[in-house]
Length: 126
Length: 126
DNA sequence: TTTATATTCACCCATGCGGGTGAATGTACG
DNA sequence: CGTACATTCACCCGCATGGGTGAATATAAA
Image 1 (spheres, chains in turn yellow, green, orange, purple):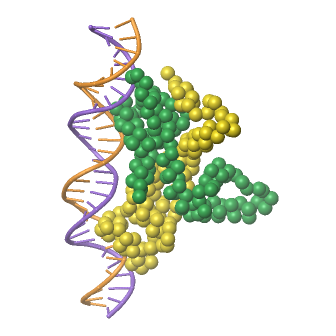
Image 2 (image 1 turned 60 degrees about the vertical axis):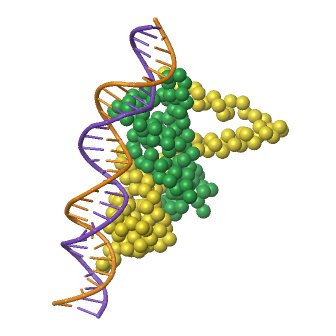
Image 3 (image 1 turned 30 degrees about the horizontal axis):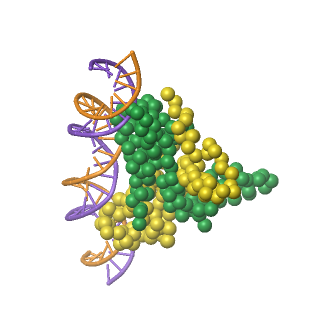
């Protein structure tokens, strides 16, 4: 399947400069030079970053004369989020554990005995 | 600000092998060798990938004798999703357009087809 | 037409990364 | 004890990447 798309999107977004560019475009569309001026790197570097974002289909380019106007096109992030959502229960374990802790501290609450510590030790295929 | 964490998590997850390792751990905990055997790459390479996932705090290691048992620890993905959610309206433009199209084509149908990706994303984005 | 502005192209350089191999370490077991 | 197994460490290699510079291209403006 088209998993390489996820590769492209995620590696594009893994760079802090490129994330900052997206953040900038969240405010409004902008030309290449406008974006470049917001960063300590050269115009050329910025241009390359934008190219990466374009290939990841996270940015759209509208050429108007000599200006290239960039805008957000973040569908790919939706796919990335969709992939991550499958792990949601795991990052929410922390919240569940905290909740369990609070419940335990509260003498009135009932405690689900095997909730926390067993699942991770079992199920190791040998 | 701890943005470098996002760097670490996103670049860790940008690699397809590492995503596959996480997928594997979603099924059950596993030893290093077990994980390695699922991939065409060497045991050493796998070990390095696991190290990357550990540094990104996406994987936990429990040393039991000579076995190292790995388990998921995906809180960091929550942060990544939180960052991406700010772009949600942009990738949902497409869904909105699709929905409008379907509504127009099929006046009688009810459309809550994409339950998987939206319910879980609620509450974070505005 | 000449000049100025916007953007990219073609290189160069250092670093990091994914992959591999072979040796070292640590633990279990006969 | 010695041997087998699980994992990592120390390197090596090729390639992609982020950064830079200077020239080229294209359009706007004078």
